[in-house]
Length: 408
Image (cartoon, rainbow, N blue to C red; front, side):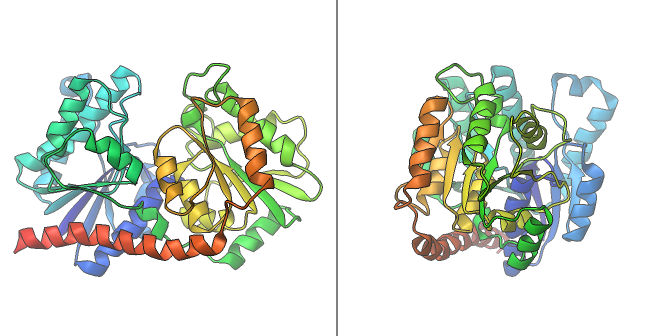
């Protein structure tokens, strides 16, 4: 069976994409005999992505982005035709993007993203191909026209898999005519690299303390316009620096962990560039370490996160790793998806909304959760992990069973 997996940007350095793709492919292969092709939407790391695909036994193709000028450029038209032909020879198309239809982005960006997201679904319908959206987050939805377009297209699916109960309640406001289910993110089933490897790696960084606090800044939060009463924009950078300087001492080390790595230079798209900025602007750097290794995989980074004593992160899939590894974690957030994943493991937790909480209040909350950890129960989290993995298996079964039904 030929299956096309779409809507992931790239894999090289992209821990979120790796976390979704690899366990999903493994679980599909356990159930059906398949030939997999995966789209990437950026050409920057195409050669590295080709090697990544070869290492994991699938093919890749560059997915063309539709713009107004696409229809006036011969090269773009050829790419769009090639993509149409790819859809025609598939048996099944599955959209694997982690989040879609973010309505509070700038108008031009959100509508361009919407058009490109719907393009594959429309081609699938044209060529009578089975099309699914795998478990992800949606929204927030804004205005009737935008929501109406989304609703009409989601209603063409056999069912919808949503990432978390709070996001499920938001999606239900669309009043779709199809069944909607809540499932955990598939990355929570991905096993880390070996503990021994992670211990050796941390030691080789020069870290000598057993008490290691991690922090992961996010370009997404830095790109959100801020006011003095928020911790978005440049206030996100200020907050990260304050956290580092507060908890850095002779007995305790800080490890800065960039979690979505691009070219290492662009502060708008690359967490490594942002994390370097944070590190370089620190007034004191003793016992502060920067993880700037661009060759790490998501499994390896997950294993490193598993060695932390406490973690403050603003990236969803780094939060997934921390929860999977049962690490006490505080989340800096911009979307309900952070709350949804925390609820899977903990009854009480700290999520700091960058749009509503200032630096002073954020520091006070972090200190409370750092000093008093009655909210954290490692044994309970590990028990919940087993149930989470069973639910992930059910989400895969739902798609595979529907595929088999169609084939019969």
